[in-house]
Image (tube, rainbow, N blue to C red; front, top):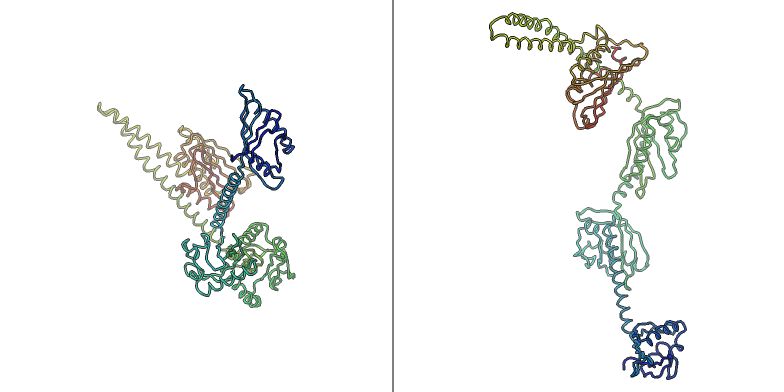
Length: 595
């Protein structure tokens, strides 16, 4: 039999065992069983309780099969498959049981090896996937070669940069690189293998487009399955090297420029925060100190410019692509006055970190003062032009108003009288005459309205606010729009000229016309606030609103802007779709009256 056979009575005493059972028990437990031995008590103590329970179940008539690993303590792990079956007499009474024991160690060990191999394959596949993902997403070119110079791996950036494909995997570096480059490459590999440690070198490379580049290369050994490979990363430092060379040349130019220029030159070491200054700082700004720090530099910048300059300084330093800055600001002199300066600087970096800033402050105070005088002159000239345009418009409107009132209205009145006489004529005339009469009346009313709009005489008769109120009252009577008017004023120490009152009236007139034409509003409000020389006008409506950034200004708004410019004022529109509109106009009345 291939299996070991034990026959055991109800007292768990062995009454028979074959040679295979004896051999298996020696191998698994180191026990030499013989007939008459108890099958349980010769086994390890920790198994007694479980086996007793199991054998009792077999004596109750159950057949039980199980597998167990034994023999670990004696250095040999043995797997046994045990089959326990009750033994009955002719009366069907259980008088003992049999134990068939089979050594399945080879099978179990083979299964364990297969599981281990499967796990190793899984780990290898997972490691390969992680390695591939890491290499393909690396911002640096990466590669692996063996000790003979065979290219075993190149990541995606390497392939793209140097024009290779995956078909080049397995080729010698002497076949894919120029001869001298391949020799240098191979010699560096031998150094890594010999020292069994990483090295850092500077080499030249040739890109796929033929351009040369300077590379900082890190090579290090890899040991895989007993074979030594050489892996590497490369960083393109071409631009950095060129910048360093340019900077070195600029140092020499700096020495000459420092002697020849009238600018205040400084050298800021950002690692120590020490700013070294040339003698022109004392000449221009009056400071005798030769060194300072960035905090003191910031304290001397005008408060209104400080945050802007600080933000620009440190944003430039933090951005590796920024090589220089050019900033205008006001700088405090030793006598307490401010001068306008242009701050021009070049940034030196090491490993993309700013370590030094060399710059110059140029005094442009006189230039700034001239620019401001030119700006003021242009503003004054523009206001004169606007004033002339406004006066010409008002003159033309008055002329048109007189023509409409004295000529057209008289002719229409004559027509009215003739039609009144015609009412007594033939039977067919009354209906036509009546319609003509009503039409003429409407024309006359409209002409009076136009005449009033073109020449608001109420401004002369009752004043600005009363004229505005009268205009609003007429609009409210139409039932098309309901306008509320609010007027507040401080101490009346400022007299508004008649032509300026007309300009303010026209702004309000343009604003209300825009609301009636475009807003589709039911309600609106006009708020007029005059405090000394300042006038604030706010026109709000509950209409459909619009996006001011998407819609260009019409003629009405341009007229309002032109009139506001005349007063050196400001116009702001606050609106959104379906949220109404708010027009805010701020005027400086003193500029208008000064003319």
